[in-house]
Image (cartoon, helix red, strand yellow):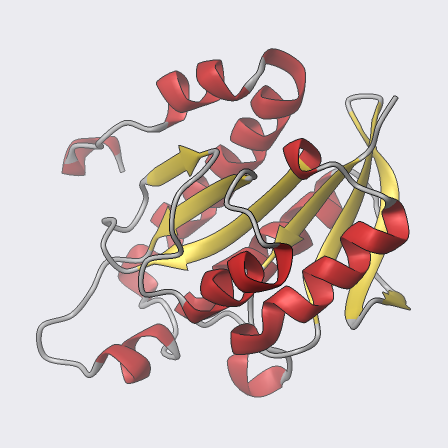
Length: 194
């Protein structure tokens, strides 16, 4: 069975830990804990862990290149594991989506996200699965300061629930297909759902 490469985007270092921009790393940490896959091995400018999710072989990856150079790491990992583009899942933050919502797609641009632009540039294709995790935006705060800020306590439970939704979406993609995952998880949530 062909293995999936599941990569969460973020910035390395304690300074960036649990910031909005690191929701991809937070997802990989949650997957690591849930499925007992240690993400400790250094490979392809990333921390990686190999294991199984629902008996499906996976590689969990956290690029160590900093966000804007994520493509270097993803390209190296795809080459090393000989991963097909259809088996790549990238998780990253999106300010244009409300906190607590997901958008799953299997092609498209990187929008304003520098990590995704880097990946598209290094892979030379947009034909891979991506899960955008909503972090919302602030009118009062500069965009850079906002994404590098931490989630407030008032959003803690929403973020925890969202991480569980991302994990369920990943399992759904691998076991039932992306179309079913999109139908199930690309939904707008009412404030009452959070």
